[in-house]
Length: 479
Image (cartoon, rainbow, N blue to C red; front, side, top):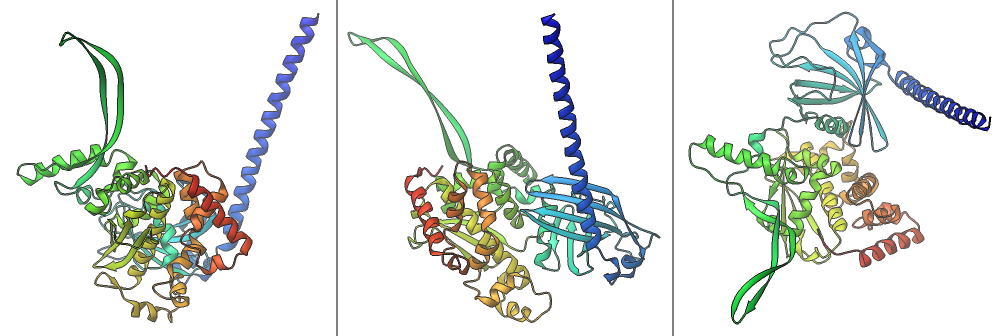
């Protein structure tokens, strides 16, 4: 009888737990449904088709709020809502497809939300727009982009998954970056380096050690002692080959695919110009290879790695920079933005040097944006930037140009708008520190800005003390 009672209790507990799990699951699904409804309700309230100047949008468009597709990749969450015409319109054009396409796209990135209304023109010889910005690898055309209230934000050119900010408006940067996340059509031929171009290859060396036994001057035996395996970065070069040229290219392509494009670490090394002064430094080159696995670093690097890029990026090393500078990024000249690292300042923790890479990459990105606004033979036309200040819809980046100067605008912009990006990058590179330590590392180089000065003395002392303690005690091994 006791056995029966005990069995009944166990079954009862299982029943109760099962009911609880079902109840919690239902609550979770109900909460998700409520969040989805709230999200759609907010978009519906923001969308005002009557404000659009294009009659076909204001009078001939219907939004299918039931057809919502969500996609997550890296730090982007993309929602796409289907939009159709009530009566199909037709274009009479020898260059464009006859039917227009429409879509609403929202993007959540680093806690910020961005909403876009897309009007899509497909090139005549392109496949039809695939109803998603995540599937554009075969599509070529133009995205006219509007806010949900009808403001014309500008246009993005699409060439088989690659984007170009035709209007040079910074409001389109997030949309452009989201599209590039899904692009796999970078021209491989353009990325294959010439023969004898150096690259680093990780190799392992195994050595067996033996004791030699002798007797009366003769070797009588070898006694095994131990085996050691060491991993090293070996500087190699892409092979040359004999003519014809296509044979040489095929040879280098095979090496690139095996060594340079098979892993996130090595692929990053071929997207920019790397000077021998950089490649020959094992600390800089080795750390740079590791950054190939950083989605945040890669998202900015890709801005210099496509057919539409307005500037090339060059990395170099030097021993001539002042000891107070870990690196310096130079304004574009001849279409090249150059980052030079101080090789005298590499006896630091790997995370600190990685922060320098990210900090300088943000400088390079701001120079790239300015160059896209005012390009004069590969250099930035400052007079053109000044004239833009009086124009409506002036890019936000120029607010800092107006408030500060060309030479001092970037750190204030970085301190106000990119510090959290640096923190996220640091956490992804090394997740062993505290939030206070990441914050303190991110502030280095920005502690002369208005944002820094606005903090209390106690906060500034705390942040600097946190960094000083960490940098003093952390391992100085670059790799």
